[in-house]
Image (cartoon, rainbow, N blue to C red; front, side, top):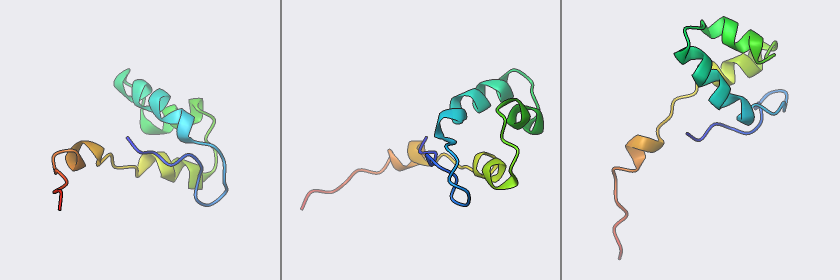
Length: 67
C-alpha cells in the first residue's frame, strides 16, 4: 500500500483517501460513487486511485541478499 500522497498532476492531497475508498468498495459502492463521496471531482485525482496497483505484498516475498 504505497499510494502517492499527492496527485501527480494537480497536487491535491489524496493519500488519506485510500482507506476510505477501499472500505466503500467493500460495502458495495461503485468506483464512481466512492470517488464522488470522497469529493474527488478532477479526473486526474480519480485516476490516481482507480489505477493504483498495490505491489508491496508481492515485493515483500523477495529477500535482499547480503554481500
